[in-house]
Image (cartoon, rainbow, N blue to C red; front, top):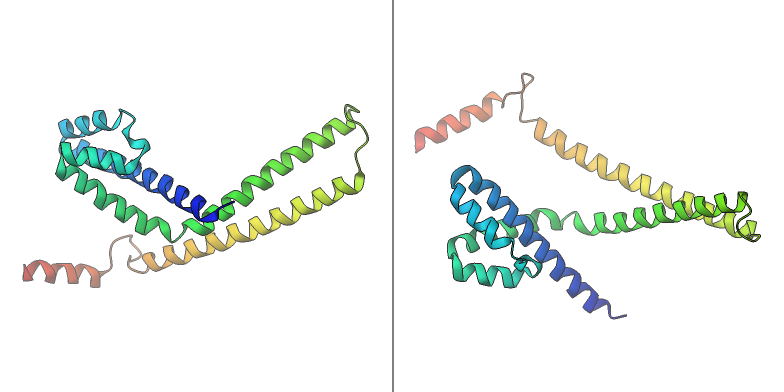
Length: 183
């Protein structure tokens, strides 16, 4: 297996998906500000061109350069925001999905064994699979708790700028008032 080619193919799929998400974001924005243009972009995008994000943007550049640049800007912003969490989320997601499938398979085997539909299964093999499944679940739970703790820290940092009434702090309001005076 050539891991470098797998990584390149994965990256291309991710870039195309980010292009799709950028298109959805721009269409949503345009629905508020320019509904006819939002309708045009939706129609342009519905022809299946989005399967290859780069080809889609090349075609959009020839049709509407301003929209293409806007989509590229939004896509770059999405990539910057997502890339930090992606490796851990991907690894955890794969492990959790594998764990879920193993649990379902184990339940199926146990149910079949109890109904005598399958020949005798090695109890040591079943016990080892159950132990591995439980250990993997414990690891997945720990990682989920760690991610939640990180999110709680970020939320706490954002809350520090809000006073008890749910309004931006007085200092923050004064700064924006002084900024307005300077303009």
